[in-house]
Amino acid sequence: MRWTQKLSETIKHSIRSWLNVIPASPYAIQINETMDFEMAAIRNKIWYSADANKIEQMCQQMPEYADKYKFWSSRSTPGMEMRKIHTGLPALIVRTLNSIIVSGMEDFEFPNTKQEQLWEEIKKDNKFRKKFEKSLKETLAVGDGAYKISVDTELSQYPILEWYSGERIEIILNRGRLKEIVFKKAYMRGSQQYVLNEHYGYGYIIPRLYKGETEVPLTALEETANMQPVTFDNSVILAVPLQIYESSQFEGRGGSIFDGKLDSFDAFDECWSQWMDALRAGRAKTYIPDCLLPRDPESGAIIRPNPFDNRYFAAEGDLREGQKNVINTDQPEIPYDSYTAAYCTALDICLQGIISPSTLGIDVKKLDNADAQREKEKTTLYTRNAIIDALQETLPELVNVAINAYHILHNESLEDVEVNVKFKEYANPSFESQVETVVKARQGGIMSIEQSVEELYGDSLDEHCKNEEIERLKQEQGLADLEEPGVNLSAGDFSMNVGDENGSTGREKNISDGQKGISGSSASSK
Image (tube, rainbow, N blue to C red; front, side, top):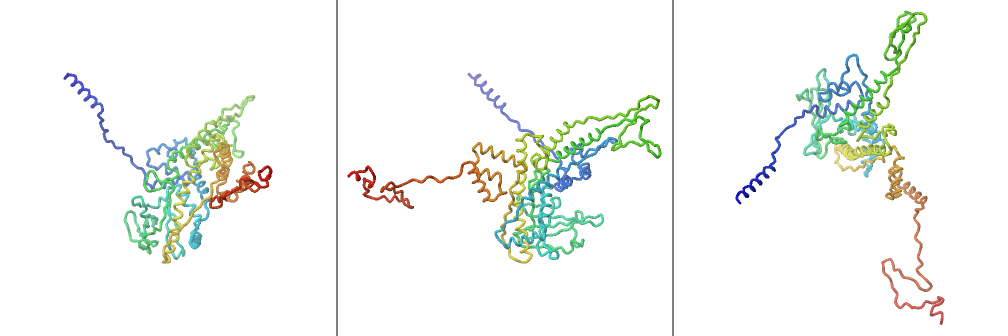
């Protein structure tokens, strides 16, 4: 019996040993950041510039490990140079999205007429429309930026709105909330650079001037000699940051629309460049016998071939009588279908999650089926909605700060500014696809006429026009509202009391069973 118990204990002990979990040894993965936000913003801005020379110079100087093998970072073997072509796709995306947003933005709505009039004067003085377009483009490309609201009575009686791109500002947060924005401006004196840092916080503006890493007096430069710290109401900060997306790499900073897409843009440029290089290399080649080579009519010297416009190769010829000296032309075959497929695939990867090809004016009918095209068209709408949500949060704040800056300038009391920023309904480039979707929903019985009209026209029609359209559709489809037939509640001298407005039946007492004047009744038979 004892050996049985001992065996049981041994088994239990063994089972316990099997279930022991040895924790993993701590292991750290070290990743070296190659750039800060400022450098990343400059990189994105160069891609947005659409300048092939700048892009190539930047990429060949980048310290990133993977970049040395990218298309724009690679260097051609001497004697085998290849023309590098930039498609300009990043800039095209930004400009198109900017046009969609700006064209759909309506005038600001104010419940207060005086505030509306004051903002109109500030907007006109600062040429706000043009400045807003620039700020939106740079925010999409760089990631973020900020408006600086300042006062200079020598230039204007209204607050001055200045836009600073993300690489020229520093955002300081306190527990995720805005504490201070530092605006940076460089001044060159010979080979020496001075940088002015203007610290904009709640209730204060503090200018500081730096020469390299050392702070120097503001009087060191003529442009900053008259600057002094300024204090005002600590409930106001005369700076408004703008960002559409959040950066996944830099906390508190905005994310560029190019994030995660630069490698795709690089591959897309390589695809297009190789295609064009193949076209140039695939030009017809002419083989001319020596005796028939083109010569200069004046000197008689052979005209040397040019690989671009005068392409020929010298072949052996025979000047003997009766010999045939034939000029042969060779046309290499270019794999057009392969290049087209690679181009379309690379383009699709570049645009995924950002914008639809049809929005850019790219014909995708031959590339996708109808369902895929409709789904891609939604991408533009999603991106537009994200941008509008950010603007509807930032622009009212900017208007509020600008108006209160005017009050601070004139020693007036601050006030709450209510403003509504409205945008028109986005006009889908494929109205036919919308109609097809609505028709299917109507046929399936899951959408009313009212909702179908709303989906198709949105804000492009006012409520009166939409109501007229609804009534017209109902009449055409035989769904017009008809009045219910009336019910005769009386018969001869007998009437039915259905009650008054208060719900009382008003039932009368001692109602006679007989009906007078009706044929066949007991009264008339007597």
